[in-house]
Length: 325
Image 1 (spheres, rainbow, N blue to C red):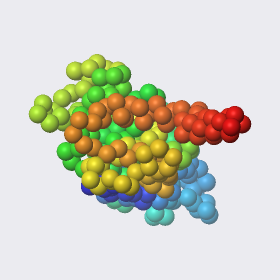
Image 2: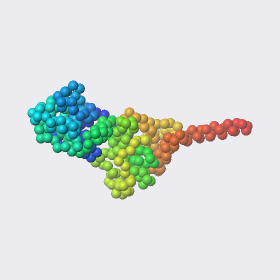
Image 3: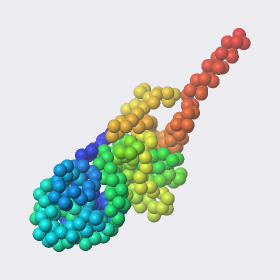
């Protein structure tokens, strides 16, 4: 079970997924859906088809989402009805599959009719054209980023995004619960959604939407974390900084470096994430161990290596003894 990843993806997203993701952030509304919502957005960018509307189709970026702003709308309105219909129909005949009207404009009935015949989609946003095009770039970049779901519980603790993974019954959720009681915050329980941020290259973890803010604790049942511990006990998403892998003691006995000199990495979405393997056995306080591992990781990031310091001290002590003999 450790390392099990579901539906890793870096393939194009659909227009329907974009409409859903932009419903709040971009104030997007679907006026005409049709089969166009199932189309893949092959080039995650927007395009203002000004030249195409004049009848010039050289280098027409049909793979992008076509944005109709006030300038395009005013130009179409200035045309004779027959010419206007011909120009709009030509966009779809050249494989355009989506028009997005900005500034809260009303979509003309003839445009809806032509789009419906072509199986295309029409969306509307209240945003200004420049604002929409700017913000939509971020939404599409997020949708296009590599992503996967991994079995594990993720928390925000001591400023770190920590993923706790391991076989069922090893105490992932219970350990996370203890960290929440010590000031941490839940990100996701049992199944964590990972995506690679295209700007920073970092991996970001979040909950599967339907299970957000909930935990399953054996013997207790399902709990709504913010209702029990307050609104500060949950975080929507967090950069993944450390992976804690829980394993039964018999699985790793004799394999682990007790001094901690070995640096393990967990490969996720093409990134190497620092990993700590913790043996699980009766009587071990996993909450304290994970808390200590988190603080140790922060010290290493700050340049403090306990093993190196101890080694230097032992060497200095040995040298001092040699000088006195």
